[in-house]
Image (cartoon, rainbow, N blue to C red; front, side, top):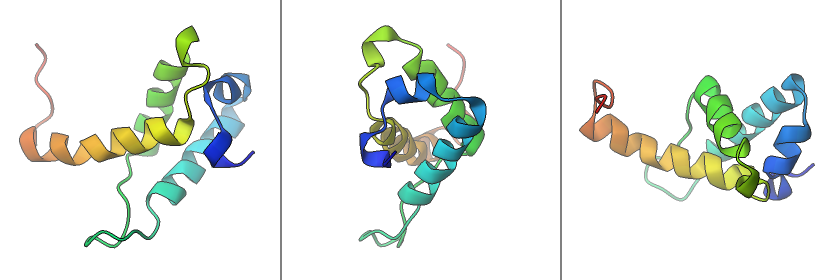
Length: 92
């Protein structure tokens, strides 16, 4: 299934191997060439991506959420986390 149409319903119907393949495909897509000065897109660690998708997709209301949107938004905020919380986000 093309990444642009894969959603949480697909994620929930996939087995572990398919989910891991999806995480790798999302990383490869998001980390590919971009028009930014860095030359490539932001990514997050595969384990973090897996848990991110497991968490979001476990909610019934998220069944139509596109996986690449969830991944790309998390990756975009990763740079903010690194800049303002270099030692990790404190527990509140």
